Length: 121
Image 1: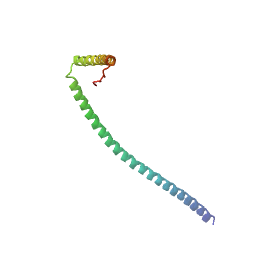
Image 2 (image 1 turned 90 degrees about the vertical axis):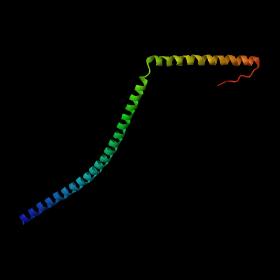
Image 3 (image 1 turned 60 degrees about the horizontal axis):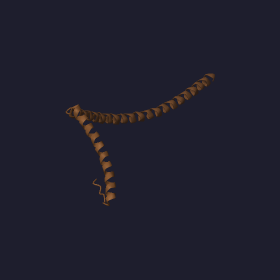
């Protein structure tokens, strides 16, 4: 009888251990499912990012080629050309100021003479 009771206790303890192990296996399977879903999601993201990266690399290459072409076009002009452009911009600003001042004078003179002033621009 003691032998049977001892064996029963051992079987009960082993059954509990087996049930606990079954619970741990079920929990591990759930974690595995979650990890598999995460891995699948990450693979999809990787494919998207690889595609985006490829598009961006093509865009960069295109912009670099365009930049190279524009630099080649600019090399056709010497520094004196750009100096002349700056001089023209400065002259234009001075002449615009002078025109504005002349317009003020014309408005005053035409008003004194009783003539209607009509702005050209």
